[in-house]
Length: 72
Image (cartoon, rainbow, N blue to C red; front, side, top):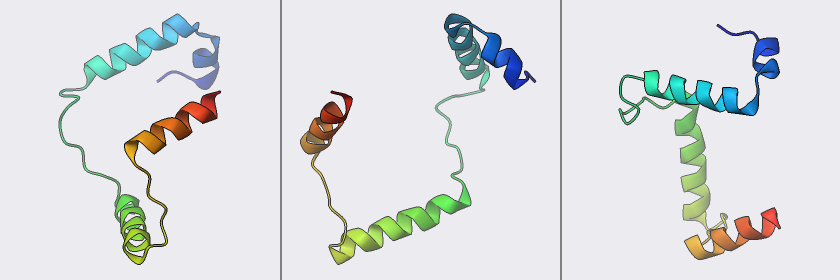
């Protein structure tokens, strides 16, 4: 396992190559992975907010615009 200092000393290119190697080392990157237990609570809360009308929902177009605005 690399220490944080070793990672910090790597160039951006080396870090990206390391990420690619880690990704390629996974048996099947598209395999289904179990979600952590806390995901269920977050999803339940979001569903409740959506069903109660408390949540503000965006269309895909609105989301893209918001993301574009936040980068500018």
